Image 1: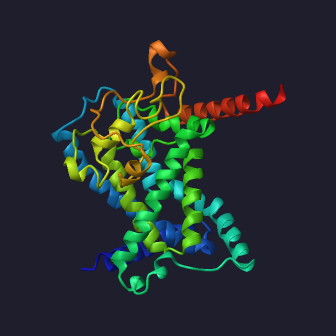
Image 2: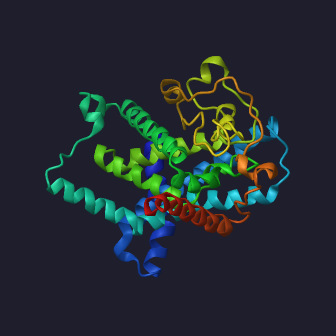
Length: 328
């Protein structure tokens, strides 16, 4: 069976059987279009969690990179995963920022910004769904690499992104362990690019879904590399665990520095092209140097809300430090 047709049918059934009745009961009949789109994200998330609990979890049992000793930290990561993969975060964006971005792009269209599709630059590509999908996948992965570099490059953004790196017990659930403001910035950039390049909504969901699933694997607690060639074609758990390594993934130039390696999300070619790849390092302990007792033992929070609150405190501290010299 055609997987696209299957997904469309499953989305329609889930919407009509579950989501639409709930929306009518809640007085949200005027938002059925947004509800249908949200149903697609919900279905994708359910499928992703199914793959995680079967295939990726089996890999973690097979060859764990380290013993799991802090299960409370992992449970917090599961909360982040459910919030994102079941569409709760996406639903919040649907009703807040997405209408603003749609209105902005609409105004730009009226001002003369042309409507175009990236895959339309190659005649005949739009008739080959797989080729079109790969083009967009490569484009958004390149953008993701650039955004990831920025998260590590600008101190104020790092203070949010640091939450993701503060996990000392990496597992397949760790991918979505992000500050909500960090996710808002990243997702807004993706939505704006998607609107600018004209990717179809279904293709956009597919691109994001595949990237998220690979990220779940790359964060997994598994000793797994893809070999001399495969390591250069797709980000492996070994490659990405190096990125999370203390003193390697972020503060590679020394304490307090902003640096890092292995930023790629899907394709390591970007790290190879821009000189940020570390191919042969063996993964060590994960986390941030300032968490260590000898470097101050900074606290990043144990629970969801504590982590979110401390992220805001770090962000405000960074912004105050940035403007203080200008006042003197």
